[in-house]
Structure formats: C-alpha cells, structure tokens
Length: 187
Length: 376
Ligand code: SF4
Ligand code: SF4
Image 1 (cartoon, each protein chain N blue to C red):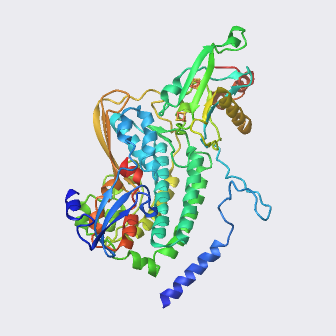
Image 2 (image 1 turned 180 degrees about the horizontal axis):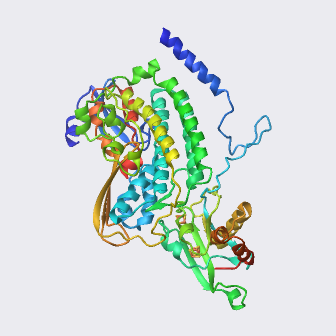
Image 3 (image 1 turned 30 degrees about the horizontal axis):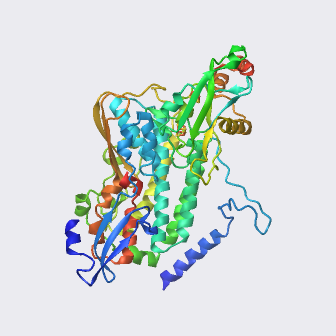
C-alpha cells in the first residue's frame, strides 16, 4: 500500500515535469491551430549533408579539376567524372590547366562519410547542409554537374565558405596571407 | 537444431505449438526471428534465426583501404559507433606501432563514454517499453537526442561519424566542446535520475523482471557472455579494468556488479554504468591536455607491416574483439570481429527455458542485442 502511494507520488512529480515545453518539433507539418510555424531542427556547423562541388567566384569556374582522387577514395564508388582542357586557361584567365567536364554522384549510394572532402587537394568538394533530397524514383538523385554546382553555391552563400587551404594560410600568416586571399586564384 | 525439428514438428505433438516471433516484431529490436515451441503459455524451446541483416561487412573490409574500413565499422554496432571506430583504429595502430597523441586519446575516451551513455539510455527506453512503461522511454530518448546533437556538432553526423582516424582524429573538437559536455553531463544525470525514479523500483516493473532468466556466474562464463550480462551474474570483469587500454588506467571508476544475474540486475547494472561513465567523462574533461590531434601519418597511404593482431575493448554491450591480418598491402587481408551481441545471444536458449511467452520479450530486451552487429 505504501509503495503504491509512493509510486503515484513519483509519477505525479514526473507528470509535473512533463508539462514543460515539448522538445519535439512538428516537422514537416508546418502550422497548427495557433498559426505557429515550426522550423526543422537547425543543423550544426559541421553537419555533413550530401556532397556538392564548389564554384570559384574569382575565375567563374568550378574548383574541381577532375583529378579523380576523391573518386578513387570513395568507399562506395558512387562518383564518376570526366576531365577536359580548360578553355579559360588558354585565354590566360585561369591557372587551372584541366577542368571538370562532367561529374556525377549517385547520392543513393553515398554514405555521407566525408572522405572525398578530406582527400581533395583543390577544395573543390564540400559536404553541404542539404539533406532533404528524397524522391520517389530510384535514379532521381543521381546528380550531375549543374546540380552539384548549384548545391555547392547555395552552401557557399549560406555559410560564407572560404576554401580551407586559404583559411589555414590566413590563420598562419596573418595579414600577409590575407592579401593573397583577396587576390584569390590558387589551385 | 535438427534434433529439435525432428522431435517437435508442429503436428507431432498436439499440446505443443510452434510460434513464430519476428523477423518483423517490435520487441526483437531489429530483424531477428525466434521460433518458440510453446506449451500453453510456457516456452518449451526456442530456436533463434539470425542473418536477416547480413551485409558481409567482414568480407567488404577486405576490399577497402585501411582508412575506408572505419566507415564499415561504424555500421556494425550502430548504437555505439565511436566505440567500434576506436577498437578498429587501435588494431591498426598496434600493428603499425603508432603513437597517438594524448589529446586524441582523451577525446576518444570522452566520446566513447558518451556513446556508452547514449546506448544505455536507449536500452533503458526500450526495456521500459518491453515491460509496458511508456514515460521513461520519452525521457531517455530526449536525453539520447541531446548526446547525439553533441556528436553532430563534433563529427558532423549523428550516428555514422567516421571521426576517428588511424593515429588520431579527423579534426579537433569545436571550441565550446568542454563547456558543452559539462552542461550535457548535468542533464544526463537529471534524465537518468528521473527515469530511474520512475522505473527501477516500480512494483510492476520489478514483478516483470525480478528472478526472470537468472543465470549463474558459471553458466555466464561458459556461454561466453561479456559486458553487463556477465557482470549482472556477479563476475567482476570489464576490459577497461582487466586490461586497461587507451587512457582508462588514469581514471577512477567502479565496475558495478549484479547479484542474481536476472533481468532486473541486467537492467539496473546499466543504470549504474551510466553514472560511472559520467564520472569518467568528468575526470577526462578535467585532465584534457592541449596538443595536436591530427594523425602523424598525415594523408599518406596506410600500409601496415605484414602480421596479425588481436585487440579487444569494452563496448556498451560487452567485449568486442578485432582480429586483423595484414599482408603488407594497403588493404586488410582479413578482419574478424568478435561481436559482443552475437556471443551474448548464445545464452538465449538457456535463458528462455521454461519461461512464459510474455517474459520472452523481456529476456530478449535485457540481453540488449544489436542486430547490425550480430549479423554483420
Ligand atoms: S572534387 Fe577534388 S578530388 Fe575530386 S575530382 Fe575534383 S578536384 Fe579531384
Ligand atoms: S561522402 Fe563518402 S560516400 Fe559520399 S561521395 Fe564522398 S567519399 Fe563517396
């Protein structure tokens, strides 16, 4: 009998605790009777969503030279790409001799491990914060170069992305390196 | 197995009925199938069927380079990813005679212990659900979610982290890591206290779990049980104490030991382990040194010398062992994993002998298996 009452008391205390603000988010059902529009849980800075290719604003071309390093290192072999001679290099505008012609990632197979980003020597690939790309057909999220660049550009704009190698230089060399960052174009 | 099927076909003996449980059953915690021979409400015999989640991880490892294998180890015991990564990295490091920086070791320990807490919290939640208690599962899931949010801010992924590297870590932890973890520990303690108050000494819960599937220390050792299932039977064995690895010998913590080896002991032991893990993390945060975390190998291709090594560690579910053979190339020649869940599952037959059908759910729940690890 005593135990029973004690148990009820414990439950009552927990019920009181339970009346605080709920921690679940009603997503994607936005809006309820009170006109409250919930947002998805924000992702953290380091969040690894689907990979995408970055865009070099200074030269107006992708960073990617299609060197195949990431493609060989990917544990699931979900990427492929083709290289071409860079027309902008011939015009003297770009220091990249080769450039990516086509690039495809089968995001169905991608396991979001981040190895491709780690091995790329050209800061050309990033793990974006994109994670809502589900579709009904099996091959719908095989993405090619334009979509990858679009996703990458979106990520760059959202986060103010600076190429990691330049960031490292800024941290190391202070002002002197900051100038080269402004000057920009390195491969 | 054949012997059972010969003696007990469904229509041979009218009093015994064949009951199929799983593979799609909410209480089997994954795709696991049990065939129960029941006599009324009593379970006469049980035959576990595994393999529904078989992905051939060990074979896949042979085709991947050493640094890619980490991603596969993440997916073995998917509730304790950091612990799995750590044991694999230690295996390769031992083979190569590689030194790991102090800071990496401490961060590894912190993350592994937090992962142990997360895993045990999930256990408390599902154990409550198996016995019919709903509220603790909400509390524990909320607590676990907080831990995983922290993991996301550290490694970028909630579950499949791929954060440890052979010889170090992928990158340093974020600047506000230490205060974040300290806040988290407070919340963990509160959550565990609350769920503990609600569930552990509840009369109904006690009635469901006390004296169910008690096994003696001898039996537990004979069946090769490890981890909480072994310690619940009163055997004081934990790899972190028995053969300290990493920096575990620098912390002051206790190994909780059970008395009767029944389901309730297995449950309550894990509650106690959460508090011990909190203690370890607190000490590790105090001692956390500065320094590099990057691997001394840099980005070089990893080619361990030819040879073989066996490394073991204490996972939330018990002792995990990794046996690695290298032929000097950039891919492992063979990797064999001794998964704790698989070995613990071998005692299922003994535990379920002559229990009630309703208890079968609780017994399986208290074993705390993860099918990703059982089937590999
Ligand atoms: S993303 Fe980087 S590693 Fe991959 S092909 Fe392009 S430049 Fe090479
Ligand atoms: S994140 Fe991993 S699986 Fe996905 S494309 Fe990059 S290397 Fe391949």
